[in-house]
Image (cartoon, rainbow, N blue to C red; front, side, top):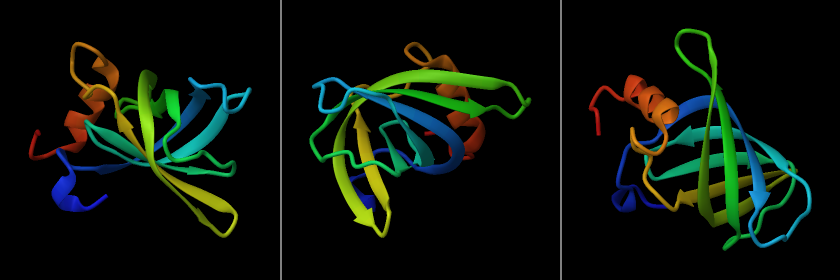
Length: 118
């Protein structure tokens, strides 16, 4: 996605995202590594393919600045997926922006990363 189309800044984050298909395209959870996150989307690395257009549920697990494991659940749509050697690079747009009301742990962590405070 072009930077001009982004509604919020993306930040690198060390996290794991477990994906589940809402359309039953696959049966099991796919575990991915998170590359970056914004209030509106996420970039992932996966060893398994995830098709563009897929409707997914995600559980994102991360370590906050205090060293505590936190998690947040989100839903989204795969807007792009590219195979690069044996890894799939995946971009997902969230169905709802991350806010303090719908995802307090992720919103708080994002704000800690964001000096501009979107």
